[in-house]
Length: 249
Ligand code: NAD
Image (cartoon, rainbow, N blue to C red; front, side, top):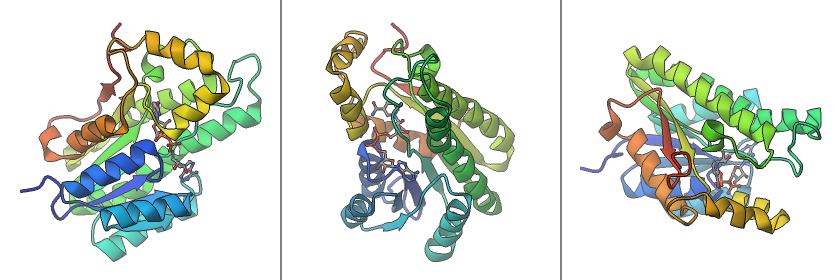
């Protein structure tokens, strides 16, 4: 029996590194995956690879997110898993002394408000079903600080941790589990974009990873699959670190 047989999983940021790897992993394990992204070409290619669907949506747009989950319920029958994963990297100079209010607000919108919106509109469907699993992508930097002056990004991910914990506790008695997943550095377009701007940053970051390398996106996907599956039936309100040991060092 596959872990996600007869389950519908909504994945935001599905055209990106972690999202795509997770879409493939969950579909291999039987899920019907609905990929969500702004990137139409990337999203469609994920849908082709998984045999599932693609919905183009901006996860910072409340009406779009509400419509997205209503459409998934109507077209696919249920909302069993929500992997709220879309995100953007920090602005170029994300120091408290220099980050503009606009840049700060943009990062909170995409990285945190989107998670609030996706939870807000996934939860009513899960409550009606009496079950569901939500996994929200945070980051190791929310647990330990990045030491690279990325205040808006780190604060947004800290918000994701707190929100996930709050919802995990609040909805546990309704059969709905909510966890935050905190990746360490993962070799994806987001990380490559960041390091292309500051190549020395990659070397500095690598030194701090006890496992001595960046993660492959499939390693994050494996952890999402665990958290979203019944194997994690006693795991909720957690901050699940998949960071190569970086926060423990
Ligand atoms: P990525 O850039 O490869 O993918 C992010 C995806 O989100 C892109 O496809 C993008 O189009 C989509 N997206 C951005 N804004 C959107 C919006 N408003 N609406 C819909 N889709 C939108 O990045 P990734 O590395 O796969 O990151 C995925 C998540 O993991 C992010 O939340 C990121 O902060 C987090 N994370 C990444 C790393 C890493 O090292 N790569 C480490 C820790 C946490």
